[in-house]
Amino acid sequence: MNIDAIVAHYHEHGYVIVPGLLDPAEIAALRALTDSVEALSLDVESENAMFDFDHDIDGKRTIQRIKKPNRIDPLYASLAAHPRVLAVAEVLIGSSIRLNHTKINMKAANGGAALEWHQDWAFAPHTNMATTVASMLIDDASTANGAMQVIPSSHRGPLLDHHDEEGYFVGAVDPGSFDPAAAAILEGPAGTVTFHHPLTLHGSGVNRSGASRRILFYEYAASDAFPLFYKVDWDEYDSRIVAGPSTSEVRFEANYVKLPFPSRAGSSIYKIQTEAKTKFFANAQ
Image 1 (cartoon, rainbow, N blue to C red):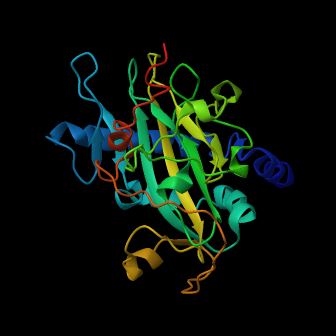
Image 2: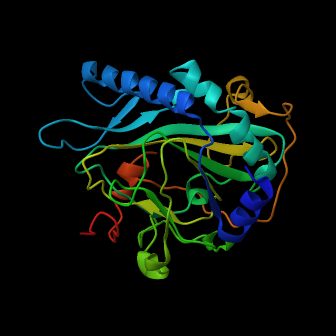
């Protein structure tokens, strides 16, 4: 792993793909655990604290998201502090890091839903921009099964508007405001980890393949980057330190912020984006 090359690509393009950060035994354990968690959904009647569901595909209900997997099993929690992942995160955002959020986004075979173009900073602004997202590929990712796509160098800004003409947050941007044809596809085998900047435009298409696509997301923030959009339970918040010491110091930067409010659809990006009038991936053939 050439850290200098990884950092240079990230700073130039706003993302980087790092193959093989998880070894075969680690990815096998991650897949087995995720399969077992998915099986728990069979006894769940409706969305709850663990699962969000997608539309039915071929008469079968599918999982859209496993929420807060770090609270579900110790393996998910330990992977948040994986030494090879943190080795990259530390050179990107600093040596003191808090796990800000985690989730597993699922795209079921033959129809798993799209996510429209957006920037994470619109959803999760902090007092400074020392945040990054590590995306662990649980399955091989390709264009066909809905691999993430990013717009290179969009991390240079600006923050695009994710609100509609009535002022409601819809969690997606107008694809006419940039060139989607310039997208880079974050493809790779299972065990690959990609990193992207909070301003990097990204999204993903419908899964049109016969294979599922599951990605475990770890959203990291420097310990002195304080969230501007939710109330903090300090003990729980502090328990998510994965590198460096705890701190109550807050660092401020002069970044543009537009809060993800008001919202007609709560906090789920999938439900929020249903309110967007202009869609790119969902309407693609």
